[in-house]
Image (tube, rainbow, N blue to C red; front, side, top):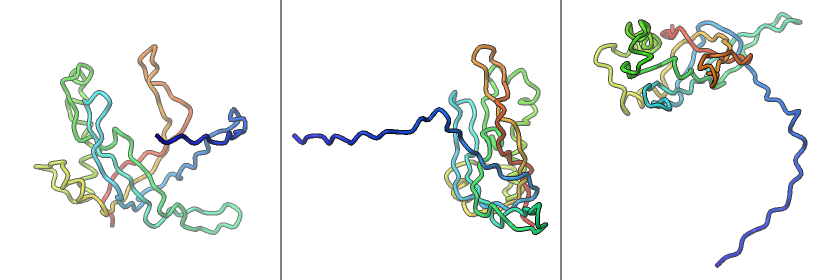
Length: 178
């Protein structure tokens, strides 16, 4: 029987003042993106499924320096990720909260997916999200608008959504690359 190694103790600095720095991509319209990873993700309850994508900015975003007035393209190859509800591919509409909502009944949860497929010229009828579909997304390019929105969480006591005060990037308005 082999023994075990004892690691040397490491004194870590006081973590109470450490803050996460987030570098948000600036809002922009028609940003050319490339799909580098794709999968289907399922909600915790198993009643929703959506596309999980990693997109990379292809050409960058024009940013103008305030002092010099010069514009340069930045954020090239920066990864961005759609939110869970942005590209829903399936929803169990028999779940009580959904069955009573006109938004779900009128299939508004599928609007982002329709825009996404239209942008990539994927036929809207007979759509099958399977391994072949997912593999076919890799390397494809499309344009998207980047905006900011405040993150929300569900308050465990009230069950209502509350804003956290933290901004996140939101990808919307999927379009064909021109």
